[in-house]
Image 1 (cartoon, rainbow, N blue to C red):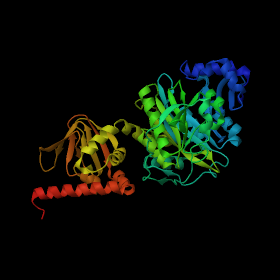
Image 2 (tube, one colour; image 1 turned 90 degrees about the horizontal axis):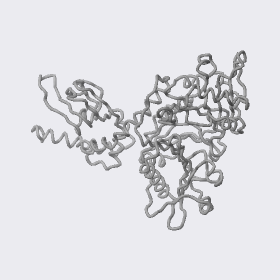
Image 3 (cartoon, rainbow, N blue to C red; image 1 turned 60 degrees about the horizontal axis):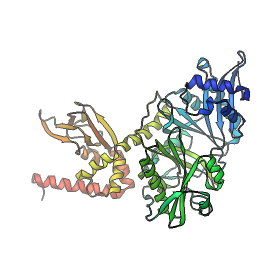
Image 4 (spheres, one colour; image 1 turned 120 degrees about the horizontal axis):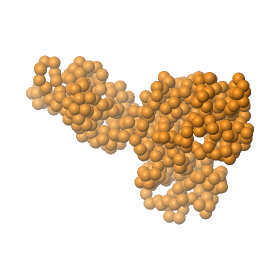
Length: 528
């Protein structure tokens, strides 16, 4: 018989043995291999630590915990984690019993529960979804095991969380699909409003930086913007919690100074095990200071080379901050409804990640909902890796002539990546996929059904299917990859959606199309 109960100090050796049997020596959090570290977890007021005991054998066979109050302002957010079952006791429903008891113990003490499920082992994902957790994101390279591992992020809401939620968040287009999916998974109407007009914050010139000390604390705490009003970035710490708390949590603030005057700061902490940096607060007198601090912190981590990724939770009601982070290389990987409490209501959060290493999302079979999230998140990271190459190719195409750098980046961001093997068709005559292909690498031969010979060739930097993209007409020829080929793709539906929210881009592209058609008619002698 399996009994779920609170862990006691006598269970510490058994908990350590479970982690050693489950992970070997690869688990990155050393406290679970240390009896004193486990004892501190057992006695902590901010954690519920349970064990599963086989009373017939008198043996502890599983353990799980809930970390309470992980938000900075008692946001009633908890993390469900560290569920482990002895390998010899698996497939007996012990994981589900631990999950059910965790929820029962804490459901009256929180509004939002979060859970990270390893992609490499779908067992925890199945338990979470059958217990009411909903897939809301895909987190890249979050834990260093034998190699970096990625996770599916799941959320569950309790009590008054959703009734306190602020409706109609404003998100940039790159966040929209993920937001709609996460809201639907959480049983909410997809009420996001797409904001494609907000620009990124500028980076103010003439400022200098230094680290926060007790000497600058008083001046910084008097700045309200980003701290007690107009908060756009959220995390587990805040400046008002005091220097002792900040130092205990190994957190730092990078100050922005205008001469000797403190005009803002960005707060962050680093996980040395996973080489992950998390931004938890941004305080700034004006937009330019905010842009300066984020740009400086991102550049410093890039040049340092010791950080695998940067992570930040940004308000889903702050499209300018979302745009600023996107232009710094951050990508949306999760959307968490009603995540934080601010003023009198709960706000949705967009979790954005800046990777400094190639993304690798190797995984076993995902659940349908987790796969749907992956299908939205993964293309963004794959595209980001070749985004500069796409921008260069798009800039050189006559179809996109006249677009400024920001417009080119917006077009490039709407593209996906396709790989075509040698001898395979990129497009087929009569095909109605209505997709533009911009060759980034490789080449193709063009054929028509009314001739047995190739009628042309396309190489890197050139495109196929521009008429199908704009008019929706079937392709007029077949293009076969002459070698392994990589292409950026833009569908008619994606371009139409872009043109609706950015008519300036659509107008220029259609103007270029008209000019191109006019030139073709002139060369054929059919124009007036």
